[in-house]
Image 1 (cartoon, rainbow, N blue to C red):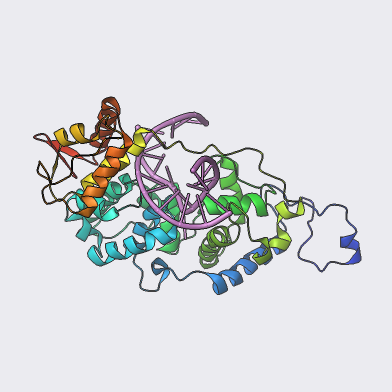
Image 2: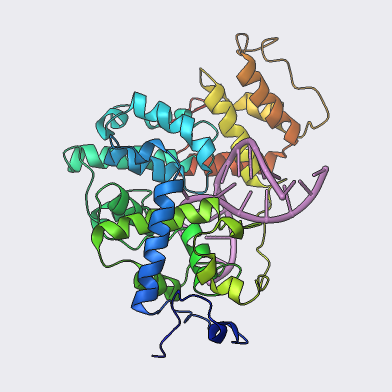
Length: 354
DNA sequence: GACTCGTGGGA
DNA sequence: TTCCCAAGAGT
């Protein structure tokens, strides 16, 4: 292994190098250099970390799990109010498990990917029934819970139970890709090489590993962002392989997810109606009001049928679904998908949350 | 591996 | 306005 330059002052000799020596892409570095990275991010995190409620001293493992699931593909600012409502209403897993799954879906609000709410309810049920109401405190145990994958299991093990776990999320992947890999962005999907690299970079000390995981994630969220990173504010910019390489552009262009006209958009609109509805919604109303009538006015909820008492939110949700101009086949597919996923149940011609 | 699955805010 | 993308998981 070639000795690598640490955080030495820029002497004439080091300055004379044509190219700064790139760190090994697998993350292998001089132990001293690694310690310097750990210390730098530890200090930065201590000074700049956001005050998030699931990081408070009075946090519970359950609260950490709920936050991690809510944060899957959803920004912090949108999660905050919903997380607070959940914790106030369901402070323990058994509290949530005691209610119908539909209540979790309704309280999920507009966070998106409502299956997460369903799985959180399922996880709470398992925790209450099989774990005496306490979260498993190992990655393996957590991984067995519905909706908990490799990332969430590692994150809860680390942040709720103080375990040394290799946490790899989209932020950490990006920071590692730049800082160590010298690339603008990580690969489209998580690779085994990234996991090995993350394991190598993780501090051996348990307590420091927990801070490191949180710090790298926080750096990715606040400084080393996907678009226009704030390198001037970065505590480890001097050690960044991507900067040393002249900030080469991404080698691929991410494929955006289609949205307009997709089944997904229809599912979302139907779910918004079911969340807003106080009573089960007739399937007949969906068929009549929401299919193939773009450009026409939806029947005013309240004029001729059982939405006589429809309030603003329900009216808005119906209007939005109507505006999609969904065809019969697409509505059928969307409903079938929701029923198959358990996000909706149908009985006696009515649709409602589970 | 490739797909699917919501939502809203900022660039 | 359009596009990008945010603490992924399950099939």
